[in-house]
Image 1 (cartoon, rainbow, N blue to C red):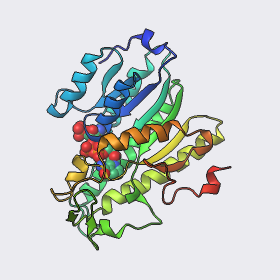
Image 2: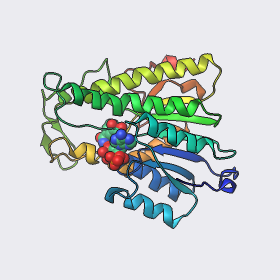
Image 3: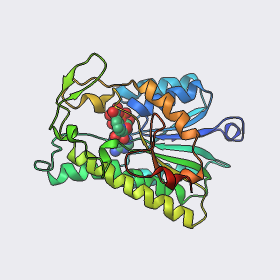
Length: 281
Ligand SMILES: NC(=O)c1ccc[n+]([C@@H]2O[C@H](COP(=O)([O-])OP(=O)(O)OC[C@H]3O[C@@H](n4cnc5c(N)ncnc54)[C@H](OP(=O)(O)O)[C@@H]3O)[C@@H](O)[C@H]2O)c1
């Protein structure tokens, strides 16, 4: 659906970012900040003319050519393939950073309540779709510097977050309000599976001498629609603006020695994927 002007992509002064799932929340904020930084952006949405994508289209229109919109629904293999095929047609395209941000959190989510379909929905959107999107991008001839998966500390296999099982009340610091931050089972499982798959992806690429860096990131507790879906009264600890400006710096600071590792928006090593000594070797 888009024609990316080749001339823009032959300009070596700026980086090219692809943001998968850019219609709102953290993904939209990536696009906003990257536009402000003068970077080139490939942004994907599911419904280009939906109300929540209007801002993104407006920003792209205001700076025609540097931000290009594509359609990609990670629940559909065909949609992923069409998107990747379109990118593969762009001559001389290099993507410095791919941020696979698409994700869902929906109820019912408890292990004792979730239906087959709802559990599958979380796994398809948060795990399988993102991994297959990365896989298909890696199968093209497009050089890719870094692929970042938007994970979550909810997916930690070692550090079980009791607050997300509804056993304690989570006090969110801004305004000091308390909320019952519960019912994360299917979501947590989907992020745990994502973490494990991306670690294998990094190891497989290393064995093939492929220099693409694979990272997992936790964006913090961010005030977005996913945050608000909790109970309707949750306030995020940080804004999308704070989270994304920090994550851009973290992402850009990582090299091939970090591939397969998990980082938080504060540049702390994630809770379980790596030990500090692992990333030093
Ligand atoms: N907010 C937090 O506190 C937090 C914490 C940890 C991790 N995360 C992760 O951060 C990522 C972004 O979340 P957010 O907080 O920005 O949530 P959000 O505001 O709800 O945005 C979710 C984004 O994912 C897209 N998406 C959902 N299903 C998709 C699909 N099948 N194909 C393509 N795109 C799809 C949505 O597009 P549509 O507009 O088309 O639905 C939207 O752009 C998610 O992976 C989430 O798990 C968030």
